[in-house]
Image 1 (cartoon, helix red, strand yellow):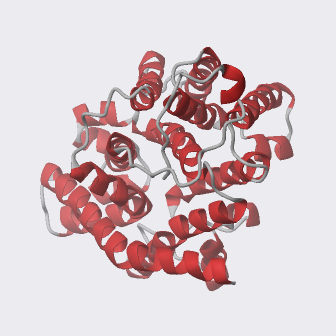
Image 2: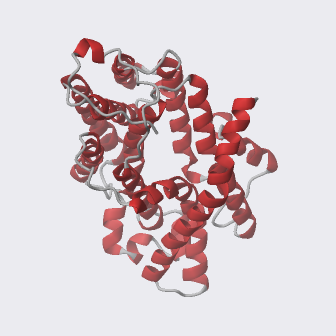
Amino acid sequence: MSLATPTTALPPAKIAVAPAPPGRPRTRLPALDGLRLVAALMVCLYHYTGRGGVVSASWHQNPAHVFPTLSRAAVYGCLGVEFFFVISGFVICMSSWGRSLGDFFRSRVARLYPAYWVALVLITGASLVLPAVVPAVRLDEFLVNLTMLQQPMGAPRVLGVCWTLWVEVRFYALFALLVVLPGVTYSRVVLFCSVWTLAAVLSTSAGGPWTELVVMPEYAPYFIGGLALYLVHRFGNQALPWGIVALSWILGLRMATEGLWHAGSPRNPYVVLLVVTLAYAAVAAVAAGWTRWAAWPWLTTAGALTYPFYLVHEHLGWFVIRVLHRGWGLPPWPTLAVTVLAMLGLAQLIHRFAETPFGPRLKRALKNS
């Protein structure tokens, strides 16, 4: 990921067209890595204790009865996805600055696919052992899942969480074609955010299936907010990017509340508003430089584990819960703790033995082809 020192000394006209200087050192933001893990754990707790369905069979009853207090908070964990999208907008803008379209494409493929393929094989294997937790898929369905294009192809998803990857891929495609291809600059990112916001608003009231597929009005505000927050981080406090952030936050509040709250819902609409606001505020704190003190090395490790953990935690976690709780009779709280730790340990193995060696190799192979 690339990071240039923000500056406010340049006049706005120069800022609007200033590309990233070549050769500028790249820096990680440990606090942002920590936020990734927070978002992943939110989603994890939702899948284990905040919803019914298949996980109820693993606990032998609805998690709301197993964890009556925790479950009331965990029902909001699904908003970790929106939190991820805000972080993703920030990270993609940061990591694409000064890169060519080819570099951007190779970095995304090398980042997404190695851990995804391993998770796909593991969960498919689990489906053969315990189909009640992970529905078995045919060979053709498995092969389509390898491409990460199973949703537009109408094939069943092996990984329950991979619907978010399809959202991410569409965001990458939009950003790559409209911003990375001509060259990432302040003005192009601002224009992209502005046009995408307008398109999302219009498609909400007058869009069709194709418009929703491309524009993604339900998720656009979160990516846009993250993009604008990176502009704040890189160029300092200016009214225009902060205005984009504020507008995306308001639209994001509307989208999240409309999607998650209804009469009889276990969620309070004001808590939904609070959680989304805290997600924006957390990334804004990183953008404003208020988290420089959080430079602990373990945060970088946490960030590295987040993606493989996110991929494997749902179905494999349900599998482990079923074995520990129903099979071995382990009490609920120890079962929950052991399952989360087991998924983090598995994520560490995937990162160490799949992502670390094969990501760079895949990138080199794509570059040399």
